Image (cartoon, rainbow, N blue to C red; front, side, top):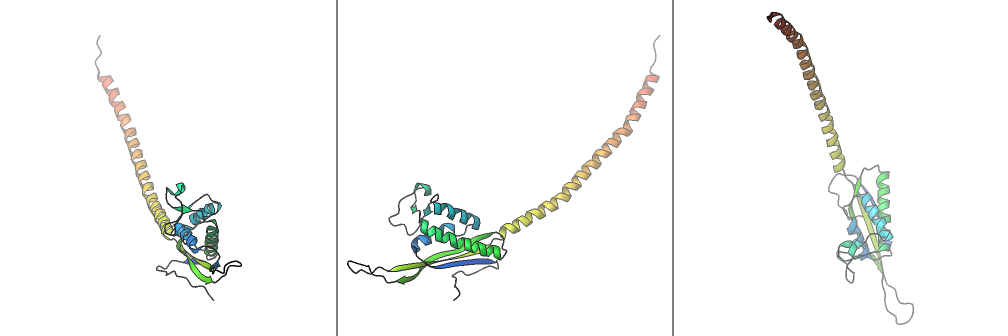
Amino acid sequence: MPATYAYQQKTAKRTARASLRGINASFKDLCEVCRSVRGKDTDYAIDFLEQAAVGEKAIYFARHNKGKGHRRELGGRKGGWPVKSVKFVLGVVKSAAANATKLSLGQTKVAHIIANKVDMYPRMSPKGRRIRQDFETAFIEVVLEESQEKVEAKKKDSKKEAAAKPVEAKKAETASDIKKSEMSSTDTKRPVEGKKLEAGRKEAPRFQ
């Protein structure tokens, strides 16, 4: 059965998708991890999640933060290090990035990423008082969208540079022509001035 996505595409940009279901992890932690990379560039999201999986980056918990401590790394906000959930999200983002390269997409960003509870199985304690403990599984879905804005900006910059080059060449040519004309005018004036000086010397009276 093909996986269905909650992503509603509003533009004609190309996308790459990946999903994972039946995850044995807290869906609340998964939601907060997905929130931290939503809307970011794919390369930045992968680097951030790799650092968070090692414990170098803390995840900000904006919603499911009951009992969480205030972290200095987050500027005093509530957060933690859900390493297990981070590894699951990192694997799905990398899978979507691999699909993007397979589809020959350009630079991509995380346009859609969500996680939630999908199935719940009843479980009973193995011994002692028989208490029901439900086993919950979660799912993650990621959609990477090709960011064409940066490509178009680069094209515009290249067009501006190409249009500016002939203008600068014309300016340089006109400046060189002006310099040549000035040099020629000074060369023509020099012999005339020399002749005038010689005539003045001849006409000057000599005192005996």
